[in-house]
Image (tube, rainbow over all chains, first blue to last red; front, side, top):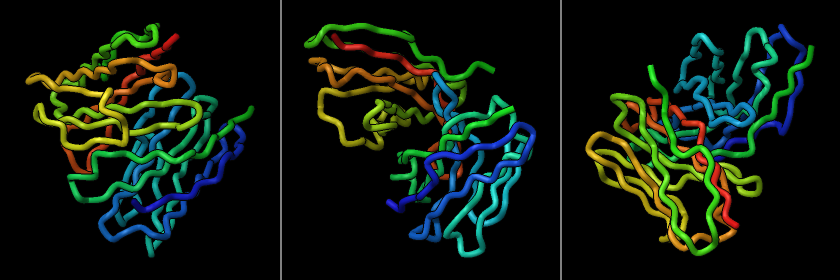
Amino acid sequence: DAKTTQPNSMESNEEEPVHLPCNHSTISGTDYIHWYRQLPSQGPEYVIHGLTSNVNNRMASLAIAEDRKSSTLILHRATLRDAAVYYCILRPYNTGTASKLTFGTGTRLQVTL
Amino acid sequence: KAGVTQTPRYLIKTRGQQVTLSCSPISGHRSVSWYQQTPGQGLQFLFEYFSETQRNKGNFPGRFSGRQFSNSRSEMNVSTLELGDSALYLCASSLARGANYGYTFGSGTRLTVV
C-alpha cells in the first residue's frame, strides 16, 4: 500500500485558516486521496476525498498537487470544534482492496482562542 | 437521518469469555467494515462485509469473526478473550464498495477485558 506522511501536530488560532499537509510520493495513478478526522471520544468522521482535481465541500477544501505526490486539507476558518486528529489516507481504485482504510498516526490539530 | 449505531457502548468481560458486538449501518448502506482502535496500534482494519459476504480481512487471529445479515446489519464476535483485546471497536458503513465512497463511522463499543 502507498504510504502517507503527515506532521505529528499543528496549532492554529480560532477563525484562522488551517492548511494540513500530506505527502504521498508513491501514490499510484488510480489512488483516491481521502481525509478523515477523529474528535476526542468519537469515531472517525469522513471529511473529503479527491482523485486529481481540487475539491470543496461544506467542511473543507482539498488541494491536490499537479503531480499528485502531495495534498493539503484546508479548513477555511478553524473553530474549537475542529480540534481533532486528521488522517490522510490513500485508497486504491481496486474494489477488492479499496474497502480497507489504512490509518497512519495522523496530525493532531490544536485550535486555540 | 440516523447514523451508524453500535451496541453496546461499553462492555466489560473476563478473560476467556466471548463477546458479540452489533452494528446497524445507515439505511441503504450495504458495505460494513470493522476496526479496532488501541493506544498502541492505532486504528486497524478487521474486516469488511458486503452482501452478507466477507470481502476483505485484516491481519487478526481467527478468534475475531463477523457476519452480515440480509438487512446489512452486522455483528462481530471475539472468542476466548485476551487482555490485549481491550479496545474501542468501530463499525463503519458505506453506500457501496470502491474508493469513490466515504465511510460513516459509529461511536464505537469500548470493550474492557479483565
